[in-house]
Amino acid sequence: MCLAIPCKVVDIVEEDGEKYAIAEYKGVKQKAKLTLLDKEVKIGDYILIHTGYALEVLSEEEAKLSLEAWEELFKALEEMEQ
Image (cartoon, rainbow, N blue to C red):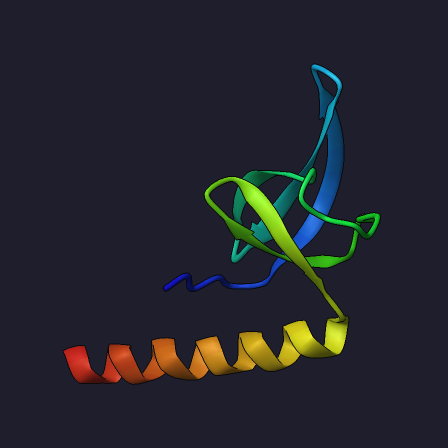
């Protein structure tokens, strides 16, 4: 099973002829290869990343709903630890 948190694209870079998104979630940035996507990715888009590849581009609404669910999960786990 693959679990992925939507990350916001903050930059697009090209290295060795390949395009990569630099995406961020809570201040953590990661680089994701864009070769598996049919859709062009732009700065400000939300993407799902797995093993260094962007798998899907999400609408802002889809990303917001997913991020809200992740925040609820993180909060519940934090409360369980206390």
